[in-house]
Structure formats: structure tokens, C-alpha cells
Length: 206
Image (tube, rainbow, N blue to C red):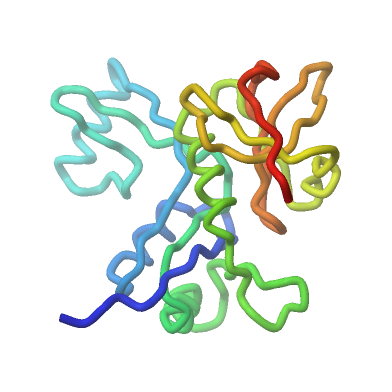
């Protein structure tokens, strides 16, 4: 039995907000999984009936989740962004899928490192913290672009030591008069949580 090569996390910028189409395009890439930060919104009434019909006709495009009689709509938390966990040798295949069927226009790009020579590997620590935060749902969260991230790296790095975000690492920043934990993926995106009491935090040595 062959071993799976070492996998890393990479971020993909998706053009025209077509994240669900990108998620589908990346299905089947060997040894690769995708992560799309989404919120779940329960559908009712006409929206529920329409979604049920689309699911039955297999025309939902990955936008819905059905759990028994209940149907949820998947709502992207970050527009135009999807993550892949894949070996480096699969990146050329992913790049090929980022070009449209006319072989002219690109559907997106994989984020590069600062020197633009290699693909930017997302440290597992950053990805784990980011996923812990978005798993709680979008309520109370604030998302920021890569250009904003450096502004939030001030003071001591902290780790949440209890509660649903236990293990999450980031920086404390005052945003709109509230002290919030900011978790960043360097060069890609940052997310700010709602207020976390100081007694739930501990300093992390860099």
C-alpha cells in the first residue's frame, strides 16, 4: 500500500465569486481535499421547496446540505476564497483546472509566497486556528483582506485556553471599542472573533 505524500494547505483566489464551481472542479484531484468556509442557513417555505427540487434534479451545484427533512443553504463566509490540502506535486494539476474550457481565461490562482517564486504554504497552526474560528458560524465574526493583516499583529500572541475556541492562536486587537482575537493566514485573510474574556487567554512565546 503506497503512502500518501506530505500534504500542505494552500489558498486559491477564485474569480467572479464562483467558489462552489471551483469546489466541484477540484473534486477528484488525487490526494486532495478542499475547505470552503461556509455558514449554514436553514431554508423554509418556498426556498425550502425550491432547494429540494434542485437537489432531486442534481442541479444544486453544492449549495445545499440536506439533513433528513431539513435543508440548509451553504453561504460562503469569505467570497472568492477556497483552500486545498494537497501534495506539492498535485499543484500543476490544480493549476490546469484553474484555466477555463477555452484555455484562455483563468478561473483563479494559487497564492504565491512573498518572492512570487513558489506557492505559499499555509502553516498548519494558522489553518487550524482559522478553521476553529469559522466552525463557530459567521455571527460576530469580521473578515479582513490580506492588506489589513499586518495592522493586527501588535502586542503578544495569545492562545485560547478554554471554551469552543480552545487552542486557537492569534493577536488581540481593539476593533470598534472591543478587544477581539484576530486570527490571520499570512498574505491571504484575517478573521476577528467576538469578545473573548482575558482570563480565557494565555501568552504564546514566539
